[in-house]
Amino acid sequence: MNKAAITEPAGFGRTIGIVALAGSALLAGCASDSALMGSGTDVTASYKAGMTRSGFLTDYARLQPTPWGQGIECWRAATLNAASYDKVLVSRIVVSLAPPTDASKEQTVDPSDLKTLTDYFHSALVKALKPQMQVVDQPGPGVVVMRIALTNLVPTTVSDSVAGTLIPYAFIAEAGSGVATGRPAGSTPYMGETGMEMQFRDGVSGAVLGECRDTQIGRKYAASTNDGAAGAAQTWASGYLSSFQAWSYAKDAFDKWALLVAKRFAELRGVDPK
Image (tube, rainbow, N blue to C red; front, side):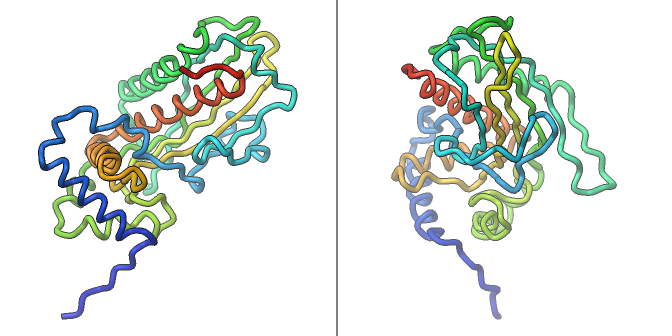
């Protein structure tokens, strides 16, 4: 019987080998170590084709890829003096849902889920920024106001993730499906996805200081192949476990964005990110 050939992306064999070693470490007893699970920030990847133009930002044409943002596109005013801002106001986060891929199915989300997600992202930003800047609840002198829209929220289809896991050898096909279809390596068609559009304004004049956007998609089969077995185990375990919860990848993306934004703030202001 002839078997269909499976095309592997570049480096796929090396990834499989390292992940197998990482998996062995987990099965040997390391899975009980909570530190091994990592923060989850490596289990989503930027998805340029999924970036949104919701109308929340002023000019999408001037957004450009950044050397620091792992796929984030940004613009900032040439006159920006970041050192003059020592306080930050994280405004209430707004949300838009992705339209259904099937026109006959309406996209519905429990409102409590949306509140949980926006509260989580707000808290992640506050936690990341607070060590270097005072977090305030009113605009004013020295305050940079962050306005955020979560765009095209898509939950992970957990039933599909479970079904794929139960199919013998599904791992091989799934792990390579992202690259084959233009999505990030390690993602699958049923992974969660979330976009963000972020705007920074002066707390007195309201002038736009900068704008950014990104879309992150979950990677069920993700491995930090450059970090050895322990790093691969962290990313693999976090990514795999996130694939069985509807909104885990969104939270993983929020953690990543919060850390990146805080680090960039520190760089522009010339302070220790702590």
